[in-house]
Every structure is written in structure tokens, then in C-alpha cells.
Length: 402
Image (cartoon, rainbow, N blue to C red; front, side):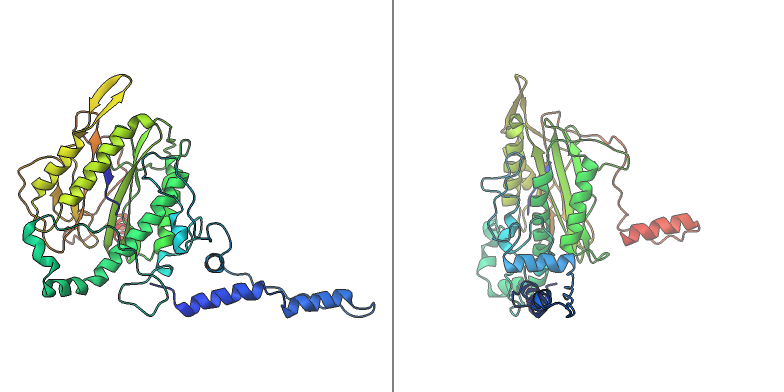
């Protein structure tokens, strides 16, 4: 399985942090001079006490390290390469140091970028990402219509939320690629990834946080596996793992995944899924039929084959797994994007958000529900039902909160 990848700190506050750093390293600090004078004074005179310096908080220290140009990665030159296969030429796990982030990441992303309509902050806007052309000729007027382009500008706050969450996801994903290697416990991997996700997004209840539990499905398990308590599964060199996690800001969810493999014999499988995902993204757009997206994905996916132990296997789409539309606080908003040719002529509509997800396999191309449950989701349209048991009330309150 794979999918397409894809609050601001006040300038005065950053200046204060820089000043603290400068003060602490100032060679002419009166406290330091006083101590030296006291040590060199004649006998019988009291020694002057050296003034104790105020200890900065970890976040302030990280910010001052990045701002002052000292410390790991602060020079803004990415250099670390992941052990995972086929992450892209020139893909560095510490790419974010070029944006002023620390290594490992510790500064909330909102302190590194600004919203598109805020020109007062001395920060770059959130990265735009990849923009595709409209796939249908009937949409060409969207590029020239002044009214439609004005409507597009009015949606800038929505795009900022999505781009903010996307950059958090991107930084977490790249850093995770630096420590995901054979020998790591999956439960430790998920815990470390989710903790960093919470830190960089500045988790705040339902306003900001992780989008859903981190999936790390191995080999024949296609999706939605997360290690429960007591699960000591360890990642092996010959495993193929699908890492799927999400980030949300004000209910706008970024759902993205990538495939981890270390053995080069699986390269054709990874290439098939990546190219099929790109084909699905290119085919998607306003007024596009969902069946046409699925057909484009299947055509690319099933043009690949994989040789394993002297036997050749065709790569197949898993026909009963799909991409999906995403709504505010709703990971599955009602529409499914097939990854095979189908008769579903439902169209993508303006202002809808979709996750284009593709699932390739050397097996039969069909999955069944199995293993223990590690994910749950509240029914988005469930009516209010009065509960009498205190345990049930507590459980529902926890679900609503998280």
C-alpha cells in the first residue's frame, strides 16, 4: 500500500530567544569578569560569586540553536540518506534543516513558516507542494476565469491548513525514515513517530494532532495493522512494510503513506505502486469519473512483474481496497476511489478532498478481514443514544476527546 505524499511564533519572540543566546555567550558578561577579578584579588578580600545563568527550556534552546547557526543540521545542508529503498534520488531524511529545523526535529512547524495572507512575519509561506494541471479540457476555463481565480484566493486559509499539516507530515515522515531499519520493534517505531507528530503539530485536543493510529502492515497484511500492547514484532531485512499515518489541523486531515523495503528484489513492486499512485493523482480532478481514476491506476500497476526465488509474479491491484474522500474530522467522507476499472461513474466535485491510495500485491488481489483489532472509529453519523453504565460513558467520552 502506498499513497500520494502529499500559529506562527511572533518575530519578537524569536528575537528574544536570539538575544538570550547572545547574552549567554557574551565574552564581556559582567558576571564572568567579576568572577575572574575575585579569583585574582589579594588575600583577605572576599571572592565575588559567579552569577548563575538562567537555564533555557528545551524548546527555546532548540530555537536558539537553529537561529544562531550552531548545532547539528543548523548549517542548512541536508546530508543523511535513509536505508529504505526507492525513496527518490536526492531524498534526504534531514531535508528540513534547510528550512531552519533542528536535527532531530524539535521546532513546531508553525514557527518555521507563515500563512499565505500574513506578510508581517519574517518567515516563508508553507510549502506549496506539487500542483497538477486539470485533466479535462472542460476545466481549462478555471485558469482564465477571474471569478474562479478569486474564489480560489478566498480558499487560501483552507490551503494553509492543508499545507501546514502536510509539512508536519513530511518532516515526521522523513525523520522516521532515518530510524526505520531492520531490528526495530514496531511498537517502538510507532510510539516514536507519533510523539514527533504530536510535537511538530503542537497537539491541542481536537484542534491539532495525529489523524489516526499509525499503521505498519507487514508483508501479506495490506493495511490497518498497528501493534497492540504486548506485541513484540520486530522489523526484518526481508520484510515489506506499509507505514501509514496522518496529521490533522482544525479537522483537515492529511492521510499519506509510504512503503519500506530493504531487499532490492522488491524494487519492481515498489516502483509499480509508486507509478500507479502518480498516475491516479494525474487522472484525478473536478468532474472526473471515479472509474476513470481506477482504470488509470490499474493500467500502470498491472504492467509490472516481480521475480522472487526464480519465479515471476504479476503485480495486481487489491481490488477491494480503495482511496477515499476526506471531510472535516472525517477520514472516510463517503466516496471511494477504486484502483481497478469499474462501472462507478460518480464524479469528483469541486472543493472535495481525496486520498489517492494504491495497493499492489504479488498475491491474488483480494483481501479478507483477519487478525486482532487495532483500529476503531466512531460512526460519524451515529445518533445520540443515552448511556446508563458509567463505564460506557467514560469510554465514549474518551473516544470523543481523542
